[in-house]
Length: 187
Image (cartoon, rainbow, N blue to C red; front, top):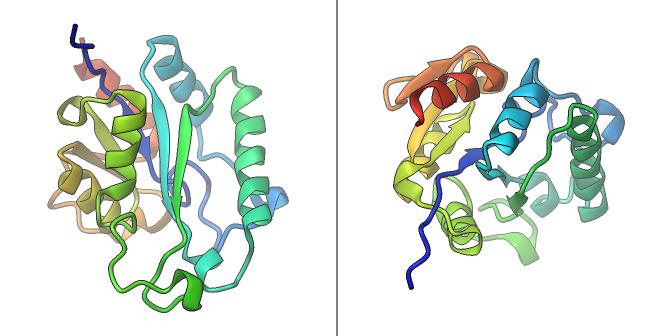
């Protein structure tokens, strides 16, 4: 028997889910973008997985550590929980061409715009990539989504205020707006 795969929403973290902070590494600096808790709760209620896909070069470059990353993710979980919302998973990539030796890689398959994190998440969560969306504030987010076979949405928060929208299937003012517009088009 073949299991039916389901669609998902993949979300960039910094500048999309969380307000943009250069190398976000402190829980006290962690804020959700406006309206996102309620929008993610709606995805949760519909059984649509919500998965964070985030480059974390700050770890690779030694600007902060894994404990800092986990503290920020914990704070995001707390803030979402206050709005009866949750993430179904988070995938991160510390690799960067200019990182310290243990994380230096010229083109790691997980580092966006490469699709490695999305492909792994799809495998682990039974996701149909062709029916899924990648939402982010940078061109590399859109490229990663396209490279994985997803539809892509650009948000005008974080770096999205200056990003090129030409490859986006959807351009939204923020993550909550993108999610609600995507849901409006799903059966």
